[in-house]
Length: 326
Image (cartoon, rainbow, N blue to C red; front, top):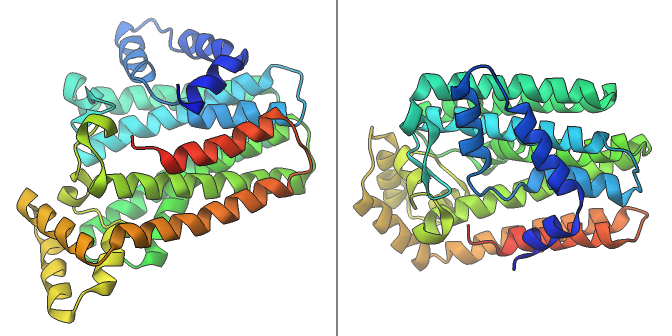
């Protein structure tokens, strides 16, 4: 049993979270409920809403508005997945065909919009204007990050580490940060404590994304739940590829630039690049990068002036994300 499953079993709120999510999917239009349930029951780890619940509990919150906020977080995340899969023409997620493959892109986009609207209803129901502001801002930043990534993709070039970090900050880290921050806000923590939890979440989200990018080159199809090499084949430049580019001789850099400039990339090119990554020890370089992020994340969490089982859960989640193979 992995630690996420154990935490879910330990927390009474998880059943309430699942019940609220299912109830919010009810609609006069059967297709909305069908698509929503397909996504939400597809075996996701629910890490983001767990962060909201655990953070609130860590600060001894006694109400139930954290469940509404956690549900809002999950709806935002699921909506972005629907939209992402359309933009990326993805065919597989969590071992299952994507919604756009089954129901089409138009349905995926419209159901994603429905989920966004439900998330805002839940934010309002929580009664916290501060939490609503945080999640509304996060939603806008995530959307902006998607556009930035699309622009970079259309430029067909090797982006810098700084550009990569900005995309990760917007697309992934922002919602992790907001998930933790609203848990602290609903528990009425001081602003600086909420900010520390936001920073912790953003670092955790960055680790999550870098691991994702690493798995695109070193993962196993049967464990990851999507096609290995998809990011590369789509022309996405992620951290392992940037690290590789920076280690190559000029003529090989030019070869890689030309591959990224092409309309399509091949599996043979992917394997050539994998071989170059092995030669230049890119896996180890990425792990070292992650190790530095882990140290920063642990330092921030240690700074939080409480000590209880919920804080221990957060430390366990750091380790789980670092060790995950899917």
